[in-house]
Length: 111
Image (cartoon, rainbow, N blue to C red; front, side, top):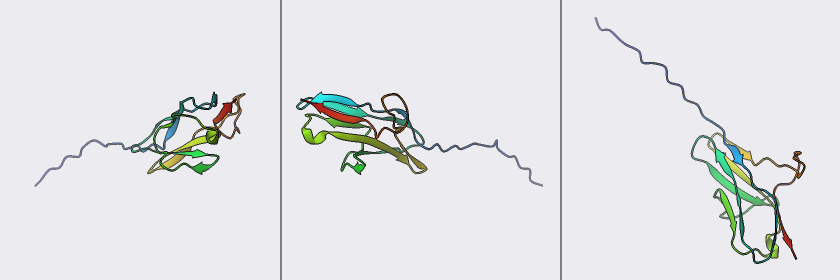
């Protein structure tokens, strides 16, 4: 007769991405530099996609969206989508008073 033994049960959890730190709206002058940042957690690997006015920005797939020298064409509303194989998450959109519904962080150029 042969005996058998069973291992402990192992748990596996898969976590949709969630955003820890969101970008904030900024007002700057042409020629200045800045960056938007998004910090996210979830089951790896995570993928980022930045959008301007709702349109994907080609090549903008990192947690940071740099603007080394602002130009007037950079004005607009930006947001980031973070996803993994199990889901996706937009940054939370908030108005200046903290209420949901703002179109996202804005980049405004003074002058």
